[in-house]
Image (cartoon, rainbow, N blue to C red; front, side, top):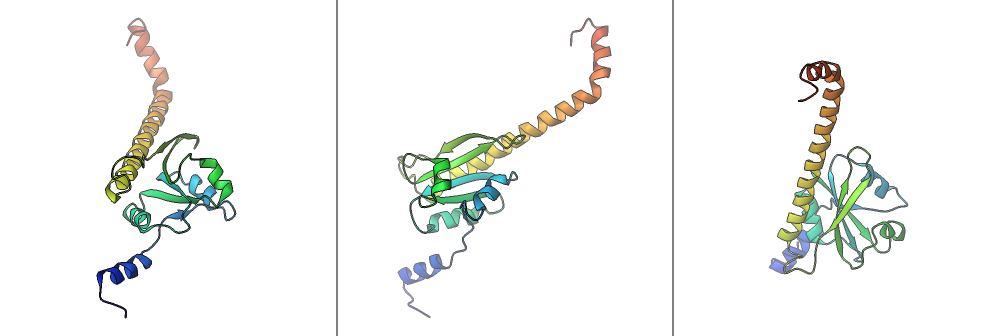
Amino acid sequence: QGERKAKAIITFLTAHMPNFVVQLKHADGSHDRFLADKSKAKVVLVTEKPETTSMFKALASEYRGRVLIGEVRKSERNVFAQYGPDKLPAFLQLMEDPASGMLLAMTAHDFTRPNAKSFNKLSNFVWDAEREFKKIKKRHAERQAEAAAGGKTSSQGSSKKSGKGGEL
């Protein structure tokens, strides 16, 4: 059963935490599957640590089903080279174009700021990634709706415009 001391309890609990962090590897295709999922925001931890920290396990649990949290280890050279951070660890937000799936930008969490490795700061970064993803997705849906509406009413709209000298 083990000791009833705080350190022993914490060790037991962290060893048994569920891990919803996606290990991104080239060989098993997990990196490709991660990038192919367009339904959620994505953040990636690039690290040289051999194990997922309890902090990132907790983040992945907190945002499970809403944000994909991936982890790339330096030893996974093929995938690591695609992110190529100058310093490790690096925590990156991937922003993609919903229409094409092309990567628009990668925003990095600044680990040099005070308390940057606290759960709250990391959680805020993930929350911002989720919020930005939703904004981009909403803008894309609005553009699609406008384009669809514009295609249906273009003949009607042009006759109304021509009656007023072409002005709106």
